[in-house]
Amino acid sequence: MHHSLSAFVKQRRKLLQLSQPDLAAKAGVGLRFLRELEQGKPTLQLDKVNLVLRLFGHELAPAPIDRAHLAEQS
Image (cartoon, rainbow, N blue to C red; front, side, top):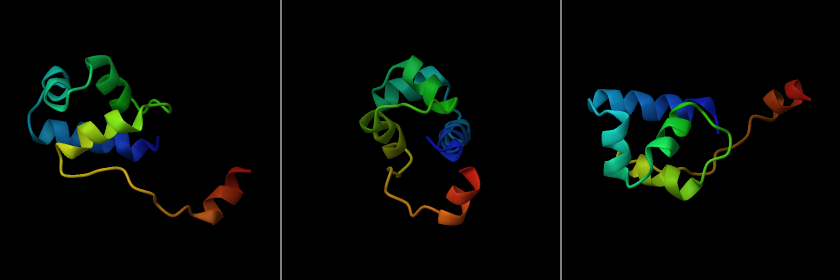
């Protein structure tokens, strides 16, 4: 997971003044899952990520890769 996803969820949750338990309940995911999402855990179930994002009017979608950035990591 890209770090910006975790930051997005955390920021939106705080904007709506929701606690992690409140957001987890509203999204229908476990509290542990939500905490891992906000911490940027690299392996998450995408269907559950989308349950959370739907509350903010968003969903995961393919994004183009910056190939220059990939070359730097090699």
